[in-house]
Length: 122
Length: 246
Image (cartoon, rainbow over all chains, first blue to last red; front, top):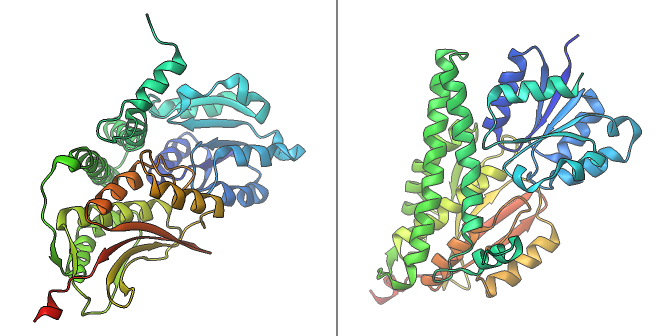
């Protein structure tokens, strides 16, 4: 059965691109354009991993990270942060929030996303 | 002697050119469209997409580049504003907004969204500089495109206020509501705007800072009305007395 990936990204075109790459690599994807809607989707589909932008419409990724860490089941979902602010974030500071990887949108290649998802699902 | 990281940040933020906000903020604001253009280009040239998808991506690259260029043009205009000579003239807001809608409809369509004008057919003329006013409404419209949700149509509305002495041009989106704290912060910052003005959490505030400068140059004011399902960003400008003199 295909692994399910939730993409939380408020730029619809970028989210669709992530989705296209992941689907071609054999994953099922769901897109959420903001963090509040993502919480409902996570309850519904229980994704195997989440790709998360930092600056989102309505509230930031950190609100979602706090929410996910509040529950045993959601706290274990691996998170890949995908952001323009990568140079300002340290994985060591975010690891306690379930963040496994940080990708820099400004330098990443389309295959990097697939590699990151593969590595967090090992 | 080299500056520490903290000192560097302070000096960059302090190095304003005629009130120009930090170069860091401007750079950050341009990162998003550039990152998107790069991702789209990489995929389009990968050969893994259908000709139809490739065509769509090229169209998205064009539209994203145009948005980024609008921001850089506004930024340049904002820096030169204190020394610029520009005319204030009576303008038909209905006609101006119709022109803007024609211009932004392809961008909205590419995002599966709609924009429409809500106005009386015979709006009062207002006093403004056509170019600056156009930039303000375009900026609000770009902003609304980012925050609108679902299939709701973004509305550009025109109405008279203050017993016909002022004309309000607003752009109404149907997205997440603004928090009260953000709204209060926004109102306070408008009165002393020497730094970017954040109206929504993920915004760098650069766009609002710029349009506030433009409105100020035309003796106008910008503001936000908070709705439970979105926001209206507006600019108030003096109504023209041209017709009353006839």
